[in-house]
Image (cartoon, rainbow, N blue to C red; front, side, top):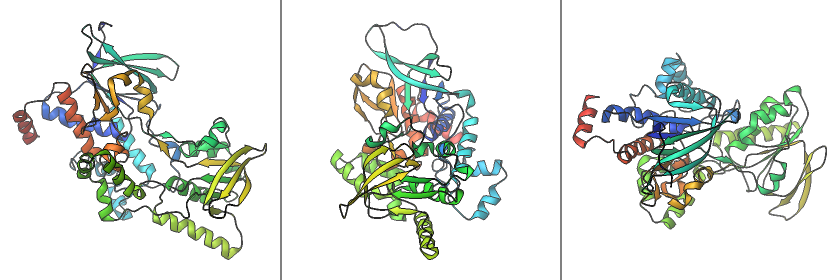
Length: 444
């Protein structure tokens, strides 16, 4: 057992400073006013500068949810951190209204997030990657503090201590097994590195390359259109296992599965019913494409037929069976899932639009794993743990199985951040009595 040495101890360290923890920073600022005391918080981000999916911000990339589902508006529409106030502060509110859309481009939304992040500069540290989160045992065996070890861009390690942690590290690129031997090959890259990968291929120099896109979701479709629009000499095949590109179901009644009240509904169900519910609405978020983008792709292929110039293809019902380095290209062995026939096609590059995994929290929290209940969480996203682990561990973006499809999306950030914030105040013993909280809220 180790005794606590004398060192600064934070009330909270947030791992990652993406949209989830940005929303939490805002909620904590509001809660500090209500409770009359602020938490000593620090948010650590591995990127050197704020970028949200920055390497995927192609020209055709648009947000797929309303700007009203920003970091705060669904909880507090009068907040100075709203997207509407961001537009006002940048003298673009009238222009945005004139666009007549609820869906800003992701480039603008990235700038909105960066603008919010700049206002919390004193509570954030960029350019450090958290390596592990370790327990600090007191002499009586209890664990009231956690030790976070990070590494900066110069390779130096730093240790910080905290009474609670919120892990919000997002998704990790999912690379199919067949493509893992090519992880250091510049010709094969995940869509998360789209812009830098395309730049390495030197497409802007007019190179007439043949590129395969593996995947059938929004990212694959956006890459297809961007390559078509931006690089006239490039030929693209989108390789799809399904029988067609399928539209995302964003109709009004279905969209209610992303409403905050649905979180209670899903969490209240037994595990088997939760899984069935998530599967029922899988077509709202996974392997689906915005209908307008599907129509654009179909129009591109139709015009090719009219002109009898077949530059691109969407190849459905195709399973990649083997991947081979052919020296001057990458060969893909494809099997038609309907006919059973096989063919081999050579490409100059392969883009993997194959989605993301949500497992990075397990690596970070591995030293705590014996103290946790298989990373399960309570309703307020606090990890269930053995009694001696007094330090609170919260998870954001890793709770889809228990909290529903909205967990990995932007839709519930304002409400979830307040729920976690309130739970943090309770866990740290800093929550004001109910009467004081109500009085502070009335005077706010």
